[in-house]
Length: 251
Image 1 (cartoon, rainbow, N blue to C red):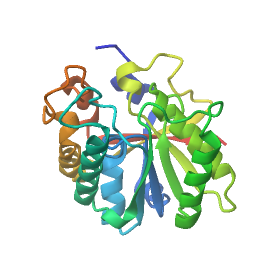
Image 2 (cartoon, helix red, strand yellow; image 1 turned 90 degrees about the horizontal axis):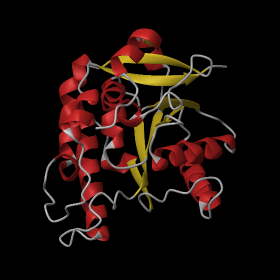
Image 3 (tube, rainbow, N blue to C red; image 1 turned 90 degrees about the vertical axis):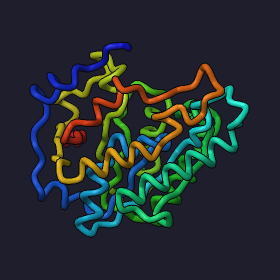
């Protein structure tokens, strides 16, 4: 596997523990997930903690997740999309989020538009409308330089959508692929963000159950595509630690 940013060293050098007050400051929260499973991997513990504390959490999935098994005959794109949405709803129910608090934008997987591409303005308008209707206190969004095109594009969409809102929520960022694929250039700088880790020990089992609910991504449920993408054990170990890290913009 490609070596990314050393997670242990990063935590030791840059990350400070968050207290209960910082969790409460999230308030009503929207999680922006580029694909079904990113919500559980990056934010599953904090989602569960917020729900247990009584805070509303909604999740918006940006892409349709239909490219994880592009050559499958059993699961062509539309059927795979439906499967991944079903898995996402199950995962979020485990974490305490009801189906009516989940939205799917259904942009094409691997083709979430960037600011210089056709479709970006329409996607920003769509996301902005959803956020305006929810009016959250906080939006959790993938780290701006997370090394996956859809993740970076999701950050750009969210940033642009929030800029247009009258009541702007706080933007807090979370990494997914940084530990597996990130380079030094992808790594957050102390001059741009503060890294804070939340203890999720009390809900770690729920997080792992939610990750496991994405069966198409963590098992060979779909077995007819030799090019299929799976979340490897090597990748999943980064999300088996008793903490989740989030990046706060330095004012």
